[in-house]
Length: 193
Image 1 (cartoon, rainbow, N blue to C red):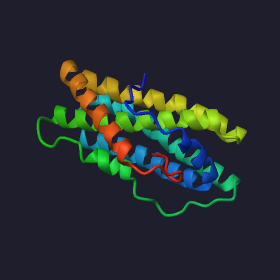
Image 2: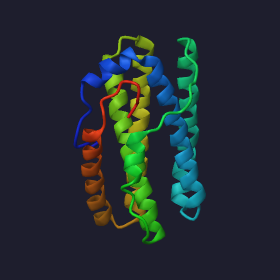
Image 3: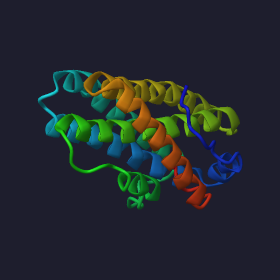
Image 4: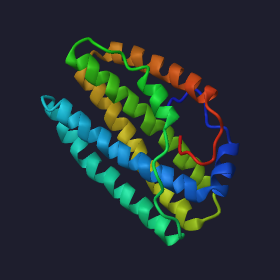
């Protein structure tokens, strides 16, 4: 369903489990950025009512995820640390095509967000299957399902707002680029992406 071209190295989940405090901190900021990204899309593309209607509940859901991650941090004796640079998202943002119509611009951001949700969904699945902490295992399973829904929201919005064939061609380009990005990133257990 996710169509990612390069799966996460299976060693990632073991490394992540050894740095669960760092993962939770990074995850909290990922949820905060996801909510902020949806708010930004709503503000900048307010003239697309279907986008506003679809993403408004996603904002609330992503912020709810942030709050839940904060609860898991506190319960385990960790505190929110300073945000870290998200090399994955920075590299993806470099692939966004500039210019074109508003529909084209919006489509670029929707596809980038779909990809981030897809990779998050894949990582949450790995965590839900492999970590020993039963509470976090269940939590990450729930989030995997949620992120899959967000991924679908972004893809379906792009396909309904812009030319379907062009969206599908561009989506394939995004998937290929994301695989290159993943291949070039260091395998780190203290980052969600």
